Image: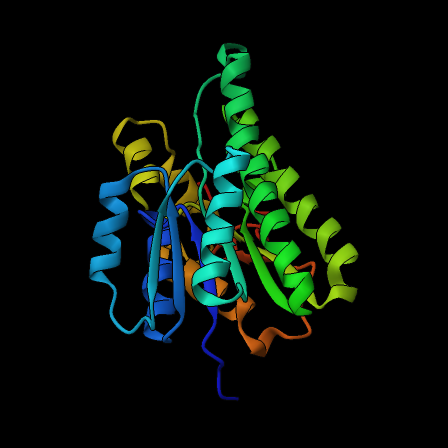
Length: 255
């Protein structure tokens, strides 16, 4: 199947999974709308891309409704529409649950859930008028299970997974597919920072993971690329684990 070059909006495009996704889709010739809260990393990403038909960079917060509407409007004006959305912007705090502040919990819900929702809603309206579109939210294996010292993060990613399924059911008749990727630990700057601070149990994750390693951002990007592609035209409401078997494993060797 010859893949149609799409007009794709990516949040959190300045680093990590968003950067890897932008790089991969640029190679396919997509027109890209790259969104991040920081200008310098965003411009560096845009300069590094090869193959993209066109690139529009937008600085803004995913939790600011006005900013979201402005970005989507600018993208539609420039490209005539949006075919795919990837919501990669996210945060994680590792701390004992007794110490998590109300504001920290709210921040996780705002960025990880509300930020995904605002972009899905705004882009979804345009996709509905087109009669087609594909949305991929970035979830986590911790959206399907729990982990110590990650109460806010787990709660937010669980909400993202349920949001995917709800939107997929409601918007299917409009021609809009909604899915998510659920990575295990990914070797991004955010995760590497936790490893460096001693807040990430790398050996424990490797022990539970049948493939015995973290995921690379490019591997998650490959899953995203598939879900937004025409090859996944009958897939919606699906949470694609990119986890090296982490969720499937009910046994952890202690040797």
